[in-house]
Image (cartoon, rainbow, N blue to C red; front, side, top):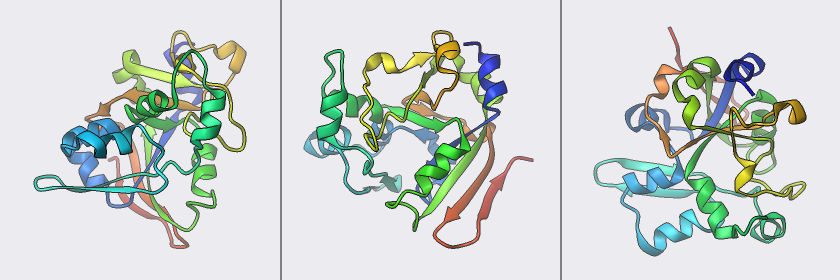
Length: 215
């Protein structure tokens, strides 16, 4: 796949975050769970419980300098079903740590809306970032990995997955798959304001509120 094909097919991409997190994203960047744990100095057993085990509910972190941050839950994922679909020798804990080390973007708005409309989230207010794919890819192409599936769910089907589920743009089998589902970056994106077209709060039976829009 060529980078040009990627942004022509998906001119915008999307990220869903906790309401109230935009100020932190502007200050610290869009951080993976692992990068956020580093920033908030989370170590030992507390870190293992967050980074290498399924989170059944959100986790709130506090720090004397950085204030408060919320790590999202992993309700769509079952450790038992995940264990049944992993290949290549990767364990459940290793897979969870791999996911927690990356930042994820939806390449289709329909995927975002499916997640927002899921039973666990439909009543909740969400922060949604709409991103210019071309500008982002031009800046981060060498770090981008693509997937053909939602790697953080085992519902309704536990599709097989392993380390090679993540492909570089050049190696992504576009002619075979015809679609990509997730675009991911390792660890963090520091300069999100350079690529974001719109930041809005959505859902919870309330009207949308635009918090930020590119000039």
